[in-house]
Image (cartoon, rainbow, N blue to C red; front, side, top):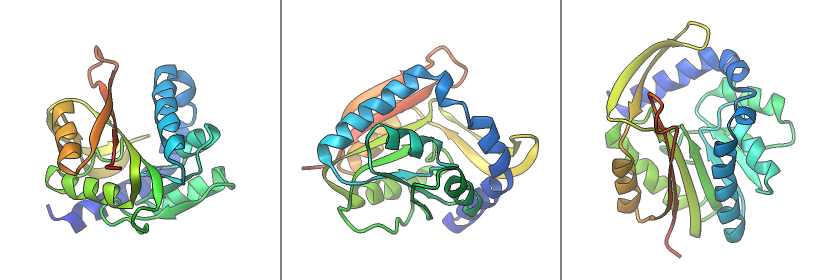
Length: 213
């Protein structure tokens, strides 16, 4: 599948489910204290660097607003115009823009942190290194990136979700070591690795890494 095809499918799928997805996830962080703790680690590291923080693949803005509450100058970028519309509606004081992590419309070295929270899970393996290169490009020297992703070693094709609405996109579960290797290949140094829900059917992986100073 070519990059334009998978990007178009991802955009259409999340435009379709955006309203239901927002309702489904609205209270998610309140029920996940360990995840809030990991986000606090990222916020502490990003504050040391200074500058704005890009939440890439921000969806309806829940995480963007949370890290803004932790003292970061956070803004959101999402592929889905409907997700961005909802984020602007629900968080009117924050900045949200339509954009793709494959070609971020951000100036080189312009942000202190990049947060990609379960947003690389639809990116094909062949495209992930280029995405991580984009993250490094826009980060300031010593800037921090945090990734959240599904841990495993299989791909699935999602045809419906969030109330049974149609979707058409791949979902990738990846070993932590593979994602960490891609980050290192892009020039990042790993600083933290967390496995959330290790006994769950699909654990969550979190990596925090730093760009060269």
